[in-house]
Length: 299
Image 1: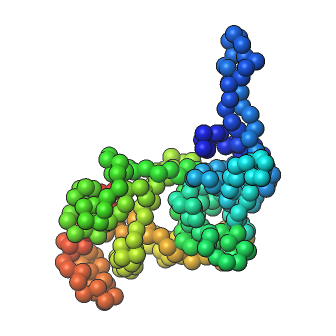
Image 2: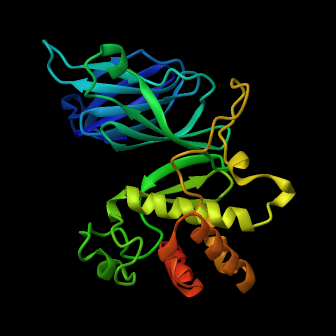
Image 3: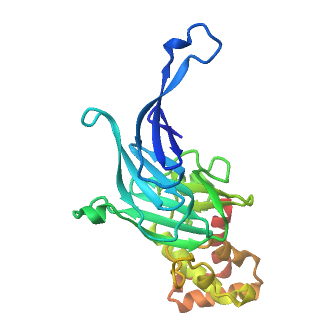
C-alpha cells in the first residue's frame, strides 16, 4: 500500500518500506528508469498478510499473532525505523481484513466471521496498558470479510462531511431524523470472499442507544430461524474460547430493517415493546417505520 510517498509491503514475517527512486544505471535501456530502495523494515511478525496505514502508523494483520500497530520513525536517531507500539494479545483471532478508523481505533475481521473494534489507550500512563489493543465492540457477522474500505453504497453519500444542523438535508433524510447526524467519512464498506457486500456506519451515543432499543424490540417479535436467540447468534466465537463472547457495540441493521417486512400486527407489537421499555415518545407505527427507513436509505 502507499505510505508517505513510499510503498509498504508485508513479505512473510517482514514489514518493509520501499522508496521509489530513479535508477541512474538504467541509461537508455528499455527497462523502467526506477528502482525500489529499502527504507527500513521490521521482523515483529510470523505471517503478515494484511496492512492498512494512517499518518505515521501501519496496522498489520498477522495470520498467527492477530493485529499489531507499527509506528514509522524517520531518521531516528540516524536512520529510519519501524517500532511496534501496540498489539492485540488475545488468542484465536486470525485476521482476514484490517482497517484504521483513527490513530487509536481499528476494525478487524477474522476467519470465524467476526467483526472486532479494537482500541488503543494512547493516553494511559502505564506502558503496558498503552501497548495493548483491547476489543471495545464485537459481533459475529457470519461472512468471511477480506476487504474493508472507506466508502458509501449510495451515490454522493460519502462525498462530504456534514454538520448536525445541515446533515439531514444534505443526505436526503427527513428533517429531524434519527440518522441526521451521521458523518459521511465514517462509513465503511466491506466485501467478503463469497461476494457479499456490507456497510458499517458510525453512530453517536444517542443514535446507538435508540437503535439498540428498536433492535431489542424487533428481536422480541421476530421468530428466530432455528430457534436461535439473536444475541446468541451474533455472539463472537473462536476456537480458543470456552464460551462465546457477548455481542456488544454493534447494531444489526438487518434485524432492525426486518421491521419493514413485518405485518401490521407485528409492527404494532414492536411499538408496544418500545413503550414498555420506557420509550413513551415512540409515536405511531408510521413514525417508527419512517425512522427505520432512514437506515435503509443508506444502502
